[in-house]
Length: 323
Image 1 (cartoon, one colour):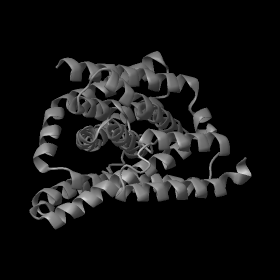
Image 2 (image 1 turned 30 degrees about the vertical axis):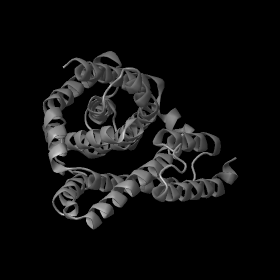
Image 3 (image 1 turned 135 degrees about the horizontal axis):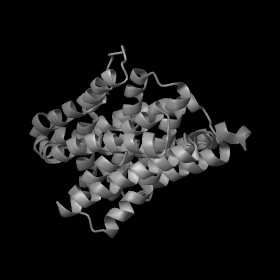
Image 4 (image 1 turned 90 degrees about the horizontal axis):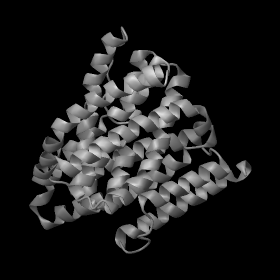
């Protein structure tokens, strides 16, 4: 199968891109092509054909995700964004600190993981998945294998979350704001948060994106706290640039693009294209989950990641349902 991986990869990407491009102008066309479906296609490809163009795949999933998140800002309003971010701020603080404490306790005392791997997975669960792991990794001087295991664990759980969160949300009768808040806090990576939100509803996607990107800013205090904890001399802290571009897009859409019908139509097109690009990103993410990645994680590490994820997911769900 491996010898067919590259031509099949190109064909699948081209077909998905063409269908999504056509659906920009006819929304009812191929409306079955949702983020979970495309992620599943990527997963099937990876497990059947293996890795094809792994470096290209990784770059596309990263940069297209960032571009699509910025584009989503053109479908949002400042007042709505501030309301979502402000309301979720208090629980965000509690959940970030609580997740780090519970995660480190479970990793080091219960599962007996090495210090770096446990801390990396806890960081990814607490804030924003791979971005947090990438930011904290150099500070704790994590080895390449520790980074790979942490990223692999988060990656697997992200894929699962994208499939199961929307059905659970509908089953429990969550409204758009409740689901958006739950997804933003309980799902690791921004990609799966936005994907799950989009699969639930447009409003849930907006709420989830805003809260998640607000949460992602916690990379800065986490990194600063990590420096003395691990006695690191590496004080370089990297914050994803697209967060600020996303904020700029919301401001532009609210105060500039909303002034006349022509600019509003442009914003609408940008927002629609961003949603379609995000759907395509799901294929690149799914295609990166090869058997090699799955096997590198290990059962004990995966069990720790699942345990911490379930604790945070249930706690967050109780919060949105009863508080």
